Image (cartoon, rainbow, N blue to C red; front, side, top):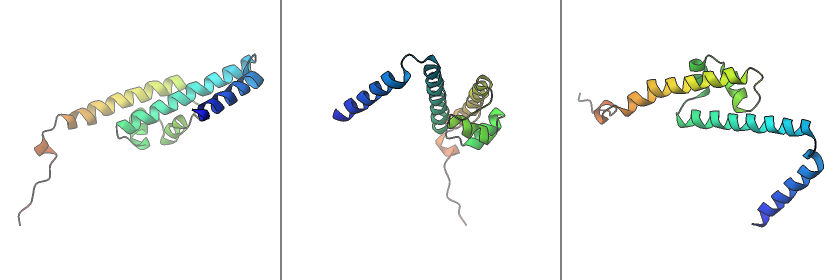
Length: 116
């Protein structure tokens, strides 16, 4: 519990001293928080769907470098366009890869012994 108090105290001190009352810094931090949340969502969903960056890049029409930049909150392109492309890519991947596998019977994804 002590650690949380120290962290909270440091945050409050920093906020009071450097952020409070400065609309430019507040807006900058708001944008950083949004980019950070977005990057975390992209990374999390991509991993849950067992996609690599190249898969996502191919389906979204973005480059793997752009995917990396998005996941590291360092993307300079149109965020709205990228989000739209990535959402379509996730939906396409789910529909074309995940659902067909889910509908397979065990014998369709089991290796059978081969006799000589």
